[in-house]
Length: 129
Image 1 (spheres, one colour):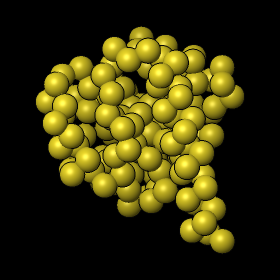
Image 2 (spheres, rainbow, N blue to C red):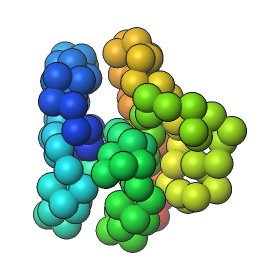
Image 3 (cartoon, one colour):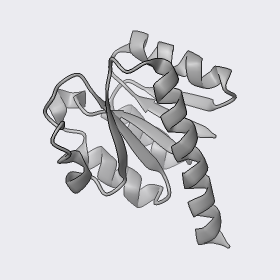
C-alpha cells in the first residue's frame, strides 16, 4: 500500500508515518502542496492523508490534481478546525472519503487508511481489468 501524507507539521506526520509503516505500508511525506504535487506526478498512491488546513485552508486544488492523476486514490482529510464538520468537504472534493480531526488516535487513522487503500487497489484493479 502506497500512502502519501501531506502535512505541514513534521512531528504529526512522523507519528502517523511510524504507525502506518508498522503495518507494512510504504509512506511518503510532503510538507507543502508543491512537494505533494511533485510526488503525485512521479508516483502512484492508494491513499493521501491531506491536511485540510494546508496553505491557509486551501487543499481543494491539490485534491483535484490528485483525482486527475490518480483516479482510484482516496483522500482522507485531516483538520484542526471545525470548518468542514458539516460535511462540505465531500461536495468540494470528489475523491474525499473521510474527514477526521488531527487529534484522532493514530490507530484510527491506520484503520481508515488500511480500509481505503484496499478499496482503492480493488477499484484500480477493476478499472485496469
